[in-house]
Length: 342
Image (cartoon, rainbow, N blue to C red; front, side, top):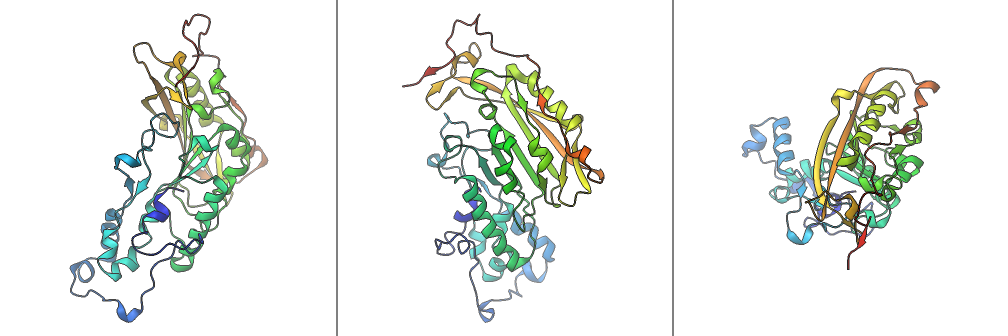
């Protein structure tokens, strides 16, 4: 879960150690709450407009402080993930009525991030997945008790090593939470998350996660981000095309599936450090671009397709394998594969 979830209310209230108690609003006596009848925000504007204003004021953003930035020589710093999310909660301290209406918005608008990875592949401030799920489940129950079912408009993002994704055990914990109502779920496979990436193994992915994992009915979009090096873009494109043709996810009611269209896929490129965990991957660097790698990211977007009844045939999505293209030419390259950085 993103760092915004508990830290953003730290100035408003003491933080008990118990995770369930850590996500609680301040308790005001009704007689102490000014109805703010003289304020146009409450006396003139409709509640729907006021909600939009408060949502805009309480939207999380990446922490801009230099000391909060993730190190560049890590696999978790990337576009959109340069630092933890924070939120300016000043508007919640203007009056008690605003606080009661909007205290939970920073949390529901945050993009909650889960790392199904080993410790080195996630920020040091992020807990293991079972612990993260436990904290979020406690917060969801509290929110449900106070406000009923609330949609998580900021969405869910899952970074997963391929082995964890294929096993599906940890992945299933996330959509399996009670009172969990996200609109968008993004699952990202980074270059170093693919199996045997350091040996240039061809891209492949088993389908157990698709065949066994179902998502809440609130989900309107599942985004599968597939990242590798620019030279391996044909492999990425092949996996993405096969996903569009052969894969689908079901929502829990088993009557609506989510499929992708090849024309809805998107491509992004970015350049990042070639050093990770004390090794500089020289052989993958582009000539003339020392110390960096060029990354290629293709996103497959799955959306509700049609009313559909779940059958055994629907659930048997196949394993996907990419062709042997874009591989390293180690015999011709005079440079070592990797070099330790002192």
